Image 1: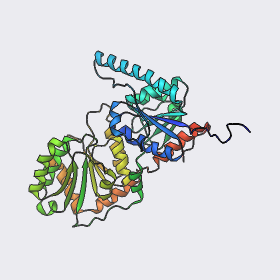
Image 2: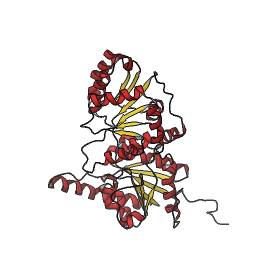
Image 3: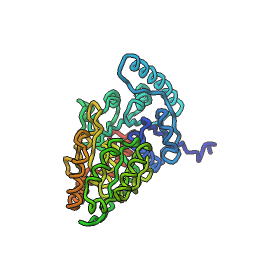
Length: 379
């Protein structure tokens, strides 16, 4: 009998690569948890910003490589390209040391070094596009990726053979969010409380601190008495906003960041938010109607496209930042307070856009590639 009897090989390793912002990290976290449940080993490659999210997915190893956003101006472009060049060689060494079976990227320039190095080494790669338009990093990586996972049925920027390798998975959300999909919309009465959750993403959004309180002050006192406001604000804005709500007799909970996103979504009747891909995916999976105010300064208007996808299904209302005024917002909120059934119907329409099984579908793709199967599973 051989001396190696009973020794089993280590589980295969999957490498995730994501930029260090919540919009990229949270979908990677959701996939990591799915892959861990299948018995894989998982590591994350990110930029220096990603370290703040540790422990990641319960404590998997996190590696930092150089990267950079290609900015305006010759100097910034040269600096960014040089930084990504360093990141490429760092990622190449990691690949040689760790020997992953599959590398999957979640977009953004920080995902490029690991994905590009993997493609050069002929390691199978998957890219995930969370927005309704293919980002520039994913455009660069798409041609050599084995599979292109997308969050929306119609994604702009896929060309030729790339489109044939695209699979609609949705945008993975964390298990505590996906569990909300089958929970009912909270009871809402014609004269009852209306709980509004206002969030501006990981950094907040000053426009909400400026517009929302003034809009609520425009409402008559009987409507204000029914409001229950939960709002994310910059630290500097909190004292001013809190005083406005207190003076107006509006119940409120104001914080710089909410770590209990699932709980806040579960309890609210309406969300007012930016429309980054992660936020839109979480709101629709929870089945909550929303007023989306897209970030206006993206050249490709990716947040507007994300929001329009839900609004077209009747699950949200889109207000451009220029049109997001106290008068316009108070008029819209007044209609909701008068006709709460409007929110109930929109909630079900929003839920129809949700994809609570996105992490599982993406995990199936990765598993199929790691196993060497010709046709990755989609369901």
